[in-house]
Length: 157
DNA sequence: GCCAACGTTGGC
DNA sequence: GCCAACGTTGGC
Image (tube, rainbow, N blue to C red; front, top):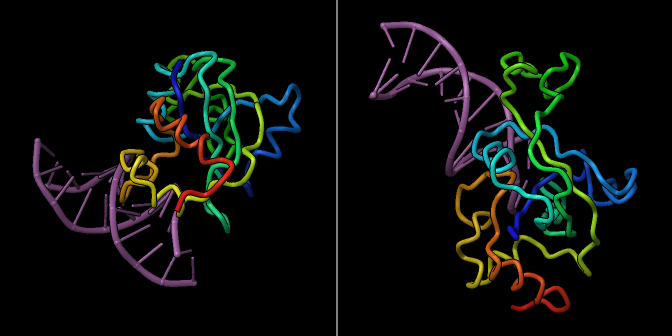
C-alpha cells in the first residue's frame, strides 16, 4: 500500500465537503502539474491512503484521511471550456490530465498544523516541509504516515 | 537547447 | 496583499 498527501484549498473543496459527497467520494480534479499528474496516472492504487491537507487558509495542515477508490483516469474538466480547469491542449482522444477518486475515511482528531510538521526531525524529508516545494500531491513514506498518526493525540514540540 | 518573461502556488 | 520559489511558454 502507498501513502500520499493531497492539498486542497478549503475555500474550494474541504474535508467537510468530501464527507458530505454521495458515498463520501469525489474525483480529485484540477491538478495541472506534470509530476502530480504522473503520480495519479501511474502510481496511485485502489486502497492507497492519503492525508487531506488544507492549504492557503488560516491554519494550513493535515485535517483528515482518505482512501483511493478509483485509479487514474482522464480529468474531464480539462475538456470543458466552461471549467476553470479547461485546457485546450487536452482532449478525450489524448488526455493530458488525470485524476483519481478518493473516499473520506475520517477527520484527524485535530488539525495537525504545518508549523508543527515543520518542526519534526522525523519529517524532514517530507516534500511538504521542504523549502520551495509546491507539489499539491506527494508521496508519504510508510514511516512518515505512521509517525504523523502517532502525534494525532498530542503535539510533539 | 537556452533563458527571460510570465503565471501560479501558498505561506505568511 | 506580498513575495519567494518554481513551472511553463515561446522567441531565438
